[in-house]
Each structure stands twice: as C-alpha cells, then as structure tokens.
Length: 247
Image (tube, rainbow, N blue to C red; front, side, top):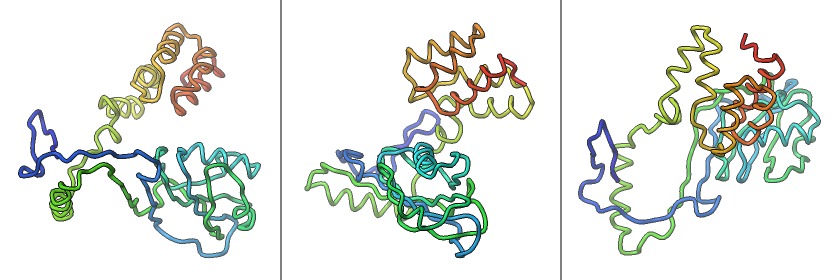
C-alpha cells in the first residue's frame, strides 16, 4: 500500500508486496453504521427512527420515506449522508408522526429498525462518527500473513487523511467556490458551480446543460440536469423560475 505526497511516493508497508483482492463485489462488502451523538428521550413532537438501507443514497431514501409518510422531504431530518453502494444504518427524524407509523413503513430497500420520540429535529452534524466494515474478496491464501501484518501496522499507526476530493472537490475547486459564495459574487459562483466536474453526470448531458447555461436557456438547463447532480438540479430550477436572476 502506498500514498502520494507532493509527487513523492511514500510506502506505508515497505516490506510487503501489494496484496491483490476485490472490494465492493457485493453491497454487503461495504457496510456503514452511523454512531449517534445522543439517543431519543422518549417524549416530544419528533420521532427518531433508525433505518437500514441497501444500495440507496441518503437523499433518495429521504424522498422515499417522505413519500410513504405523505410529508415534504424537508420534514425528514438526518445527521449525515451515507454511501449508496453499501448497506448502511443511520438515524433519521420526522415531526408529527408516531413511532408505530414509522415501524410499519413498507419502503423498497429500506428497513426501519426502531422508532422513538424526541424533542428536536435531527440535523446535519448530530453524530459522533461512522463505523465501517469492509470485506476484501479473492485474497490468495498464502498472503494472509502479509494481510495480518499490514492490518496490525494500520491499527498502530492509522491511515493517512484522504479527504481531499471529498472535502475540497474533485479538482480542488471547493475553496474558490466558497470564496465566491462568501463574497456574494452569485453569478460568478454559479458559473463556476455549473462548470465543475460531476462524477455521476453523463458527458453528453453535462455538455448540453453547460451550453444552455452559457446561452441563458434556464428551462433547458433545469430539464436536462435531472440525471447530473441533485444540488445542481435545484440551482437550475431556481434560475429557471427567476429567469436567470442570480440574486
């Protein structure tokens, strides 16, 4: 295993040859368990409920749950986003429902594990962290000694921080976007936002969206962006409704 630092390759385990293996062959091979900051107290207008979802992004799970409850998606609270290509557990909340209603939900790819009342809505950041369980398949039996030595070293020394693309964007554009947003340069921010790379976007769709954006065809932007990016889709819908007024 290696890491790259400013163009220089640094070996984490210099005495161990790379061990072949497969990750995420199945959804169950990548599991995430959210660790809550606090537990529900048993009283209040909100209901905290624990869900286990399979192969589903958190925001899509929120929309499905809200649809089953007959409430707006914004009524469903959550502490953080969890991986889509995985089996994940996380706590959510909803106001005005009752625990029995949550426990009886029948939603595809989602199981409700428990439900209990609480006094406030669950919001982003209301969690201690996440616990990950990963399964690596196809490791040669004769290399298990190397695997055990590597795992022992990682437990002792930890892993390098690889949050760069997640926290600052795939091309590091997060800092510039943040500067424009804080400065109130809305149009420049939106121009940069639309032009950034979206890993889930289809190249042809992105090209259409960007050309329509450049020519001010806001309705076309909003219509074609549905398969590109959830937040971008929302921005473009607002622009279409306001006829391009970034304010």
